[in-house]
Length: 235
Image (cartoon, rainbow, N blue to C red; front, side, top):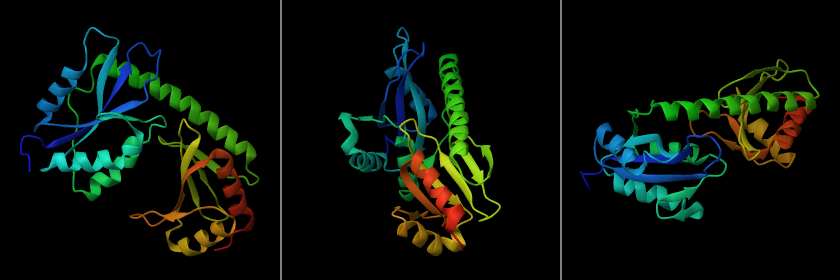
């Protein structure tokens, strides 16, 4: 065990001017305490450059080096160089979170993440994502054969069915390959998964919540799935 390193972090570079999108993230470790984490990020970031370093998530663990090694192995197919990984679809954090839970790492709040350049970049990213999610909601709604109630969450569009009592949670992804979760399907998982598999779709059960979900599917496929369920599925 290395007592000098207790924090695992994910870092990215951001363009303060918002002119370029940088698809790489760094998974690294540093010493104990938020002060050390903040110092590490400041060390990596060149204050005179428009490209700045930003820590987007961090966890604490007694054996940070072992956890880091496990994460690097998990992400090896997307490694670019050293501790830097390609994250074109912006899903690296999503993939790491359940593994960090299993390894007993504790998520910590990141200090010094509210500086002006970070706020400005995050504001632009949120505005861009909100516009894309709103557009996606309209696009999917226009292709649905049943009239479903809808709303927008932080992650993406949500559709509610009064007929099947299911809720369709869609996670927006820039790549167009998304995850869709079938809310309120825990008690009918066997029936729903069997129905979808007969139609040629790959389904899995959420390990904690128990509902059905599909990973990495196109928005056209999501439309097809919802239309099939609403037209043919009976629990």
